[in-house]
Image (cartoon, rainbow, N blue to C red):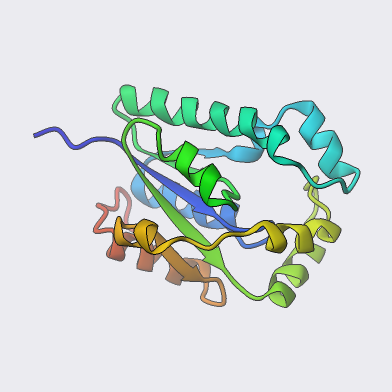
Length: 178
């Protein structure tokens, strides 16, 4: 029996640690990794750089590109790790239509902690001033999403602890010992 490709979508507000966790999971599992930010058209990046929150009409084409990438990888027999804020249930529903099994890993934490982390980042186009709009938009994982394997994770734990917990909870085979 062929196991379908699995896509781990590391989600949460800006500054929650998506890139760090996704990179560590990708290395541990030996899976392809992508940053959803790389799929944004220039117009979206320009808006965010100016501190203008994106609207749904800005996000739908971006999310479709991400879903298409996940489907292409699944059709090639590849599992993936992807960072994507995926703040709304409707966004996750679109992404979940990709070929393969799609699981969401919600990196959840207090606004104060995330704000501190954002202040220390360099080279990112999302300014800390947009963090309140991210929390206002965030719709936590539903019971149905959690029942199908998606996880809510407390970001006060270390990245290593989170990656170990994810791999254990999802019973994923690590490709590389740490």
